[in-house]
Image (cartoon, rainbow, N blue to C red; front, side, top):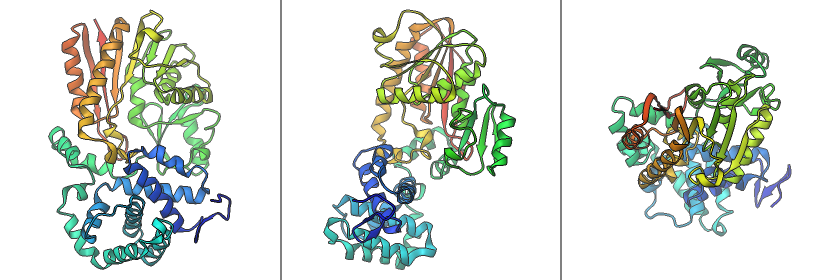
Length: 431
């Protein structure tokens, strides 16, 4: 397959909607087969930029609308498709038909052409028929969809059930935030530039933003990072407003020995170092994944910051700890990521209810492993990007029972909305 400016795939030009639908279908099929969206998008690495961007946009849109396209196909087809990529192509085409109604004839035509590249073209007639039936029956189908909980709220039933129990007043707002694109927020590196000065530079380039938190700027509209003034020079990083709260809460003192135990890609590590200003933190950043640990180093280098970075499992204390206790520990624990579903919409497809118990067990193990490494009087910040109680309040309640020398001195639950992702923080002090 060619990938240059005039690249094509069969009868499809690389800049056509059909080609983007085809690429999106292949990405979506891999997600439904268990790959993360980031892994699946690697399939597009060598594709032309215009096709890659369009396919990515479609894939994100389909995954955010969890269950909606499947509901419609279930009403239009007498039996489920066994060809995964054609099923995904239909989901992609339905998404475009719903979001771009002015282009209905073109969407159907291009989807049928794309189907000619799958299964030897044997399903072109079926694809054509299904999409045209949707257009004829759309009003009835969308009316029926209102009465199907999964299709209407676009979340798994178990997820909705947990949200209702935990947040009876807020669960619909959480769902709405999950189903929409997330905000883009920047963290200004105040070692290099003041927040007000950077805001002025944004405005000078036509990028509108508002100040949030102590060093954050939320953009009116997302932009590619190469449009951000001074990004390559380390003036600014992309980091959600909720994520920026971690460094503010832990707030280590100058000269403190600090551990970021699950650090990749390094945003919170960098923020801790930036807040130290001219002072120096003795910072150790760990991540179990060697490739992700490398990203920590490259991000710190761009920002002009220094820390010891190691690829290590924080649970295997004997393999990386030198015996010196820490003044402050950040335990940004692996979690369900239920607070960042708008940013990672594949979570709604890949996550299972049974995962929550497994993740809670892993979180408990991390807390138990790290607590002995903390000095008396030291602080540990437990953090997740989850909204599920079992990973958050209940996790810390249980830890406090196990560890009588631990005191909870602060706790915050950030819920997803149009301004920030969802995060939980519990600040603990060692007696």
